Image 1: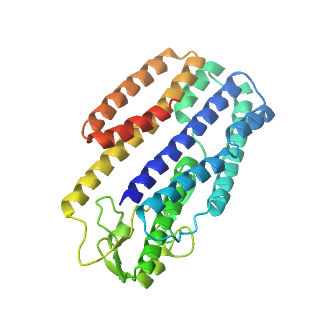
Image 2: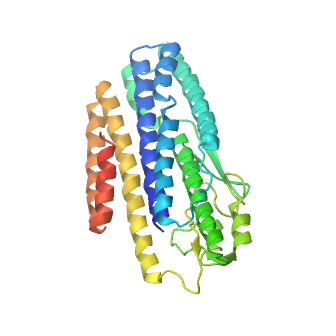
Image 3: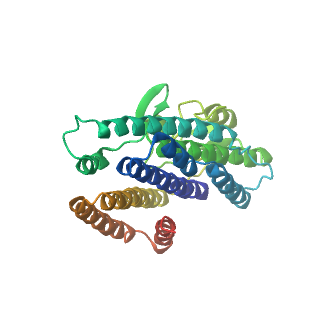
Length: 321
């Protein structure tokens, strides 16, 4: 089950990473509008933000994951962990987002210069900050649209699946070395409706391989982009329910703290934008919201045990480095 914790932490790190890039893009967007920077300037600066360093970052995380697998599994055979498919997906999404933002800066630059604009530019931009949106990507499962999500969320989900799938492969490799016949997916309270039918289900190796599938979304019944299911050996015993319940509670708390931390990052970025536009009223409101989030983060962290709390503290510190 440690693999699942590592994956969750690693996906959160990547979400922080993308959040910072999206925040920089937003600040650049309003800087260009406020200072009448042209489309070419925006495209040039946007390229500096959305470079290729994500691939290096992801490759480093996957190397750490390999080391984690070596520690927790007996088999010397490792699943094929590759960033090729992930990198292609990420590049397509990032390029689409850059095109979307470039088109948007052009549209708003024309609108601001229009004599039909009823408010002055500063007042218009102040009101535009909370309405700002980036491009979105559809997230599908079993052939149906679940929801549209930001590039940050979609890339993080695909990364989650890449690591989760390889955790499954490593467990199957361990089973092959030890002639393990039966496997199961330990129950977790945060299972989605698609995965719920497989919780605690005992399966053969062939059934696991069928579910694993050959592409990012597996069989589309399980291992979809946001899947949290891990695979374990079944030897006439399962993990104790009380341990599973405690783990689910800790997971829910940590996910809430993660969500609040991402929101806090976006609020701090908006404070910088509104300060640059001279909108003190909005700055005060955003600071009040930030203080509220800080209080809730402290309340949530107090519910965690010491080890879990330290993980959260370190993760939150990293965003400000």
